[in-house]
Image 1 (spheres, rainbow, N blue to C red):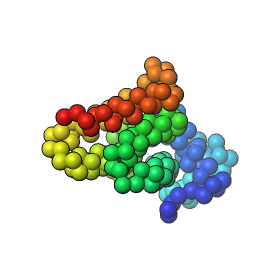
Image 2 (image 1 turned 135 degrees about the vertical axis):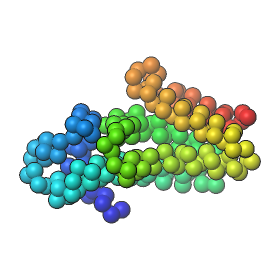
Image 3 (image 1 turned 90 degrees about the vertical axis):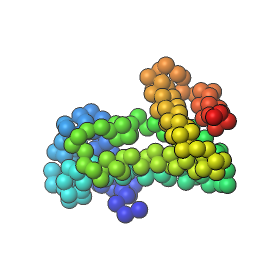
Image 4 (image 1 turned 180 degrees about the vertical axis):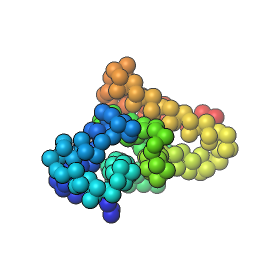
Amino acid sequence: MAGQPRKNSKRNLLIQKGIEELNRYGIAGFSIRRVADDCGVSCGAPYKHFGNKNGFITAIVEYVNQTWFDAQKEIVANCQGNTRQQLVEISVNYVKFLVENPHFRSILMLKDDSLDTVSHNMRGQLSFTSRSLVEKYCDEVGMPADVKARKLYVVRALIYGAALMMDNGELEYNETNLDYVRFNIDREFDLL
């Protein structure tokens, strides 16, 4: 993908440190100068790679998106031809992605009025596959629009709720609890 950082490149290092910067200070406190200092590069290096602060934030969002999209490809391929199984496995793996990548979570949950429209829209793409699989499965089995909307809400609530509970220690992060998520998402599509 164009714009995707190469391993061990200066651009990749800047993105990794940029993620840490966002985790610590948010968008409003994001300092390109501090990121450059953390990387041991000149203050101009981030501008060379990203143009400006918005370009830098966009590159970070692209990086997080690409990481999740790469993981999804394998999941979808393993469940080829079974939309319901794809949506269940994508959902469970999204929980895992959120829990196992806490440094990405600030990007995923980013809510800031200073976030430009492009970055905001790109950030929203992270849940595109799970949303589209819910809609596709509901269409395949003939669920009405209002039921489809409820199913989408429940699946998203289970994903984000489980990730939050596992992250804050209310629910242990283990296979048993991931199986509970899997069971409940799958069961949701047996209910009307």
